[in-house]
Image (tube, rainbow, N blue to C red):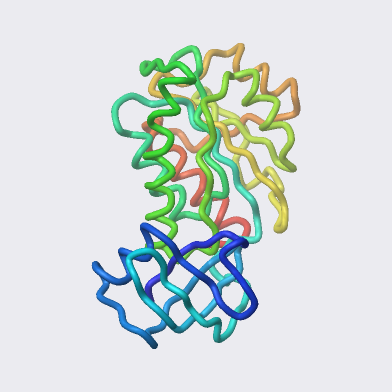
Length: 241
C-alpha cells in the first residue's frame, strides 16, 4: 500500500489532506482514484485512509483506522557520522534509515578527507533529507528520521553524552557491543569515524564525557560499512531486527 507522511496540521477531524508534491505523485504517477486506500504516517502513528478527492493541489482522504507503527524500534538511535568523501553519506543515510535509525548527525572530524563549511553542507542536507524520506517510505517506517546540520567534534561529544548509551566505534578497539548492556526503550548514540578513523584526542574527549569506546571485531571496516554493522548489531541485541 502506498505510504505517505504528513504533519499534524494536515489532520482535521476524521480527514487528512496531502499537498504537493504528494498530491501530484498520487494522481499522476500512481494514477490512484477516489476510493483507493493509502497509509498516512504522522509521528509514529499510521492511518489507513480512503481517497475522497484528488487534484494536483491536494488529495483529501477519510481516515478509516489508525494504530501506532509496528515497524518502529523501541530504541531511539542517533548516528553521529564523521563526514565521508564522495557520495558515501547518501548510502549511509539510506541504509541507516532502513535499519531503524532515528536521527543522523554528520560530524566534521580531524581526519575527514571531505571538508565542508556549515553553509556548504546545508546545500547537501536537503538532498540527504529527501533520501531519508524515500528510504522511510520504502522500508515502512512510521517516522521520517532527521538529518541534522554539520557538527564539530565537541558538539557531537556533548550530544552523544545525552543518550542513555553513548558509544564511539574506535578502530583501535574497545568493548564488545554485546557487553555494553543495551536496554529496550532507551536512547543510544553511536559515533562513527571517517576514512581515516579518529584522533586519539577525539576519542578521549567523548569518553571523558561518558561515552564508551567499542570495537566491531578484528577487521577494519570501511566508514560506510561500520555504521551499518553497528546499527544491525544494536537492533539485533535489543530485539528490533
